[in-house]
Image 1 (cartoon, rainbow, N blue to C red):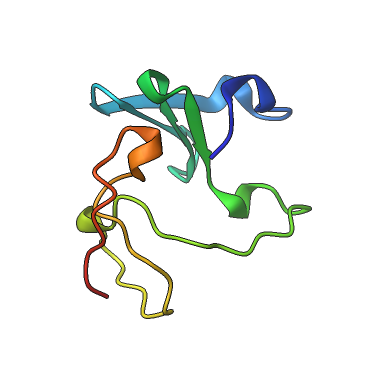
Image 2: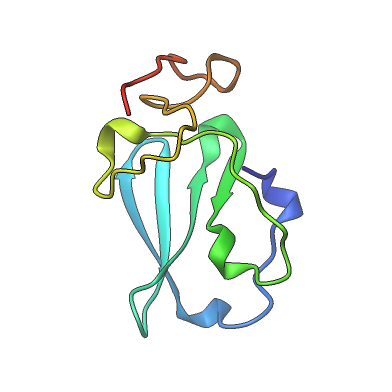
Length: 97
């Protein structure tokens, strides 16, 4: 999760399309391939950038958010939150793996 001012699209910005799933979730995807790029959470002041879109980023996840909506269960031993941590406006509720 990043602050919006820390995120910029350096290639293909003209191909980004947005789908507003909820009031706090604006999903952005590539109009050519349909690939997920990032999700804006304006009320929270955060942008969720998919790590795979940043090849130079060394990324080790520490938690799964919005796991209650998962379509691909992960059995990796990391905490799974129903939505967001409490400090980010979520319930902080942990759901089973």
